[in-house]
Length: 74
Image 1 (tube, rainbow, N blue to C red):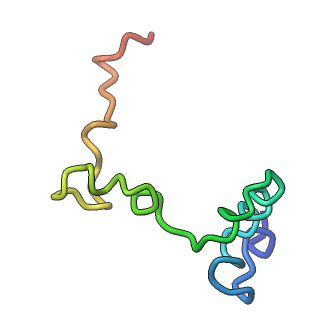
Image 2: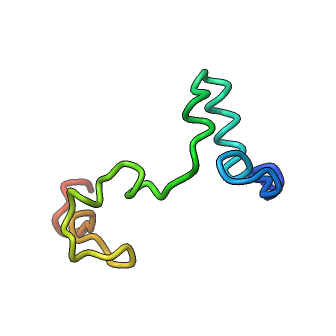
């Protein structure tokens, strides 16, 4: 999908970035949420405060790693 469909940075913060998602939210009646400035999900949901403060965004999350040897799926 071309970038000009996903974003229009001439429109400014809270409008132009993530344009496709904003249009979808507005269509679903989420007009207030559609106009909020974007935030990274770990900051937007405040989950970073609940997690280990020593972790960095570039670290691999040990809680999400999957060892195929431990899996019941065959």
